[in-house]
Amino acid sequence: MSLDSLEKHMLKQIADIEEVPMGAYNIRKDGKGIARNTTSNIDIVPKKDKPGIDIIIKENTKNESVHIPVILTAEGLKDVVYNDFYIGKNADVVIVAGCGIHNNYCETSEHDGIHTFHLEENCKVRYVEKHYGEGDGTGKRILNPETIIFQKKGSSFEMETVQIKGVDSTVRNTVAHLEEDTNLVITERLMTHGTQHAKTSFEVNLNGENSSTHVTSRSVAKENSTQEFISKVIGNTKSFGHVECDAIIMDKAKVISTPEIVANHLDANLIHEAAIGKIAGDQIIKLMTLGLTEQEAEEQIINGFLK
Image (spheres, rainbow, N blue to C red):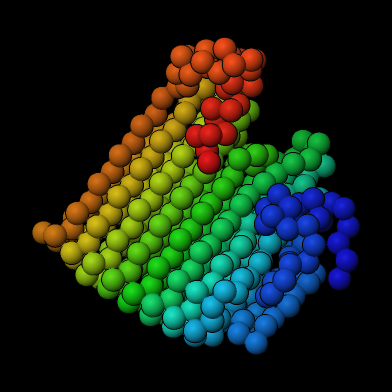
């Protein structure tokens, strides 16, 4: 399969690839699969009852990756997809998802991706999901991702979610259920501007003994945009949970952070930290003495904060 220049550009933005990737992949464009490849250890099976795929990874699979990017370029399309991931025992894999919307029209384009992960014992997953929007049209670019995670004994899941440009509205919901000796690490990076709105909600259920989670959100809200961050960590046994929410607010933007920690067990150790503030003037002045303009200094501080 060959990709045109727009497809290559969008894939570079959301999946850091410009050509058809190596290994297992499923590329979806405008509501249809346009390319798919499997390996001896990773199978991708289209669902029969609804749009989406099942990604089945055999136990003991090591050093393999799965790419499942989505591109929207059609006018007025609302795309909904249900993807289920089944990761076998002792597997160690990287999964790269994400959606890019190119909207040159006056109608809204929307993608809602519901991803459910089923981790077997002692497997390890790194999951990267990037969202990106662009285009000269007046139509909205909307992305509503939902992630559901089930972790069995000894498994670990690392999730990185990034959205830093061009998405008018997004609602992200993530719910995780952790069994014994599991670990979940979530890192969110987010930037909004104009009149954009972003809402993210994380709920982590620490059900198994010695389960743990660390959720970090770093965001920048500019101009008249708004952001909401909601986190809920529930410790039902001996467990550890740590949530950090750090935001930079600029112009007339608004940021709301709502923490909730629920300890249902004496040995549930749960921590939430939140900080919302502006860029310090002395930081800008220091960079300006090095030859940067005020705008360049501001951009450098923001880029460093979101790394």
